[in-house]
Image (cartoon, rainbow, N blue to C red):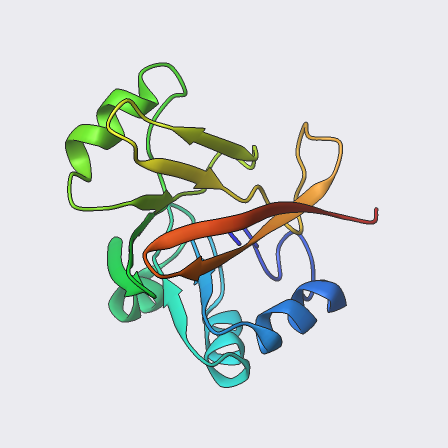
Length: 160
């Protein structure tokens, strides 16, 4: 997930997303939490949390979260960052900035994104589960990491 903006855009995360987070082996949040209470709750309710701060996150969140996170999940080298810049040239910029990653999860735009760079880096933006902006739906992503491979990447649409 990314760009939750709780409690500015929604008071809480949707129940469906909480169910997914509690069932997952790992939860990834690509920034723009807005308030530290959501970080505390996600830490308490998930088995493993990988998160970064975003441009709307203040000093307390920035003191607890990195700007870029790098983790390995079942052999998949994952990087997480909030912003990657404009869509034009994104693949080339990310190839250069994340040469040691297999998958990069990012946020900021609230626009779901799933592409593969020339080097083979998978770029994923889950959109936002609380602030669809100009998108038709609020969204989040799920995926499976197994034996060094990311599979079954699915964009989930939340009801309005």
